[in-house]
Image (cartoon, rainbow, N blue to C red; front, side, top):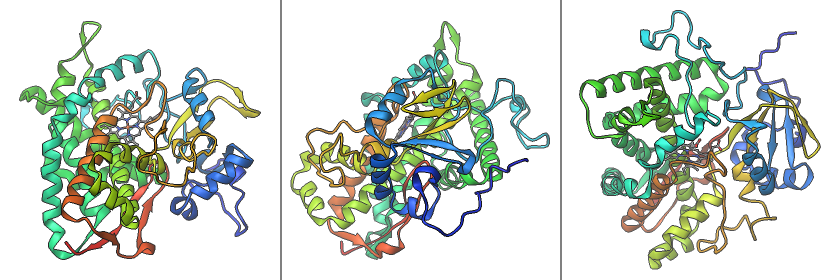
Length: 424
Ligand code: HEM
């Protein structure tokens, strides 16, 4: 029988068994996954589902650490769990014959190094990014981010309300990423829509994912060609001028890395800024502390990242392995549930409580092991600046209607509609 993995299996209206039938796109899971993870951690720490092509899902901190470090069995060649289908093989033709892509990309199998690569390619692909994303380099974009936050606040402060997800959180990362890459900053709406179509809606809609993927790759290809003709001093030029083993970085590699930076740089931080504001809108005591004790900000950001970690990446089982009694087969996929690990009571005291000055906070919101987030300095800077600038001008705000907040689910979780009201 041919199974269409893009269609969700029919489900009767009985209580779901999350241990054997979890669904990362179920409304209940997207809205409030925390009690589900608590139950799984206690009763079935590595859950399994047949949905969306099938996957395993560990929820305990210790298991996440073990699996992230076992790169022999758990490969990064496929980091999205849905809608299924095998990861590309070398030389795969991933475009439809009549797809509208530049001729030079016809034989290119899309990838996003370093996140989709294993060593040895991963090692140099990651090294390339460490310098431009170092704390020192990222600091060069701080003032521009502050100015942009203030411009956004100017746009809504007199109205007494804004959509904290749409009018604020969403706009901040696209502007910084466009500035770093050296691509048009007035295209933030387009970037947001591409990212959403590829990573959020596209996870359950293969056509939409393919179409937005084609559009993003084509756009970045043209931007890279333009940089070659008209060099500027930005991240695309840096990548084009770098050498690996004495040879220039291949153009297709630069393309894949820019694709990753655009996607990883926008969706994730948009979500983490949004969740931070969702929390602050409901906790006046935490807003007050941040205003009265501004030196707390760095610790507070780590705690908000721990409590509302947005990112769950996947792994591809490269060799059959029995992990704690779970018979994982080559080709199976596994969800790296870093967010669930960060609420594990075996690791964190009172994990469901947000304690802005939590002392011992080894959270893994940015992952762990060789793929640990290369953009963490940038993400932290954006979170810090966005919270500081907002609180300076709008110290008192709350959710307009808590029930009307909508969340993106799947592999990146964060608010997508979040009315905030205030008197400035
Ligand atoms: C709060 C915001 C962010 C969170 C929570 C986050 C989270 C993560 C996580 C969990 C991973 C590991 C994935 C895995 O193990 O498969 C990762 C990898 C990565 N992230 Fe982020 N990220 C954020 C922001 C950013 C930003 C702003 C950038 C830069 C543009 C970025 C670039 C990357 C890159 C390049 C990798 C791949 C590293 C590698 O494979 O060696 N991320 N991120």
